Image (cartoon, rainbow, N blue to C red; front, top):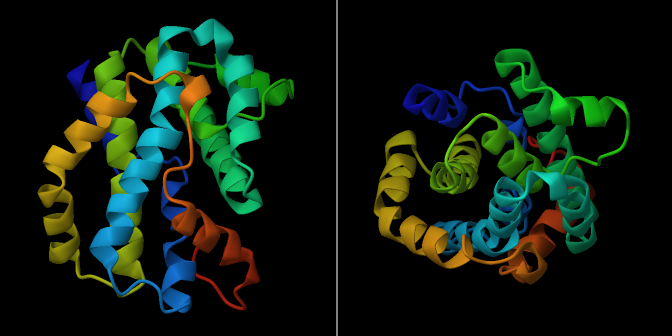
Length: 213
């Protein structure tokens, strides 16, 4: 089971996450990425308050996947973020179906009965793969942080070693976010970083871009 968790957390696991900057590219283009540490912290809390409640609820009650998918869609009012969540959710479901023969959500995609937002799909799939709730929460939050630091490197905002230092320095913050937000119900999820959400919304207005969102 530990090997499976490591495999899912590995950057080589193809979920499409590296195509998204979570608003960082637009922030950089607008001259608002000078305080990279603050943006990364905002992204962690955004993932904690906005996504972990769905991961936890879907892991606890995978039979609620359709309801949780609808709730996630209703919360993600930003069209860019909503589209990115669905793209990553479908990629993650398809990869799990091919690699682990966990096809239930991928079947729902093909039947068009789910939008497949990432957070609820992630929780339900990791439950189906017998990954513990705590591991599911930590892997999802780790992925959100890794996505931001990777985008920062490719945008030239930080070097590879600096990005790794930023990740290491946030270990205690990640634990606090998991502890606080992992206990929340999906109905209590909220956007915790409205400025970052606004940057993400501006992504489609960029003339040229490196990332999908």
